[in-house]
Length: 65
Picture 1 (cartoon, one colour):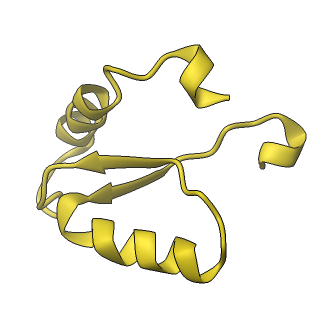
Picture 2 (cartoon, one colour; picture 1 turned 90 degrees about the vertical axis):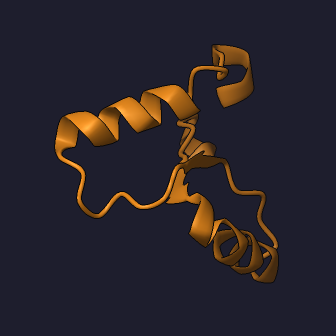
């Protein structure tokens, strides 16, 4: 997606962060990773959106491009 000027992020829980980073390293890519508190399995859409908003609060347009 970066080739088209669209920043794409992977959203993962802290439990899966090492797996995401290992997979990215194996593919020689730098992932844009948003880490949220684990678990998310029992959350409704609003609760998940709140966790993502909390995790992305520090992102700016400059860091997302």
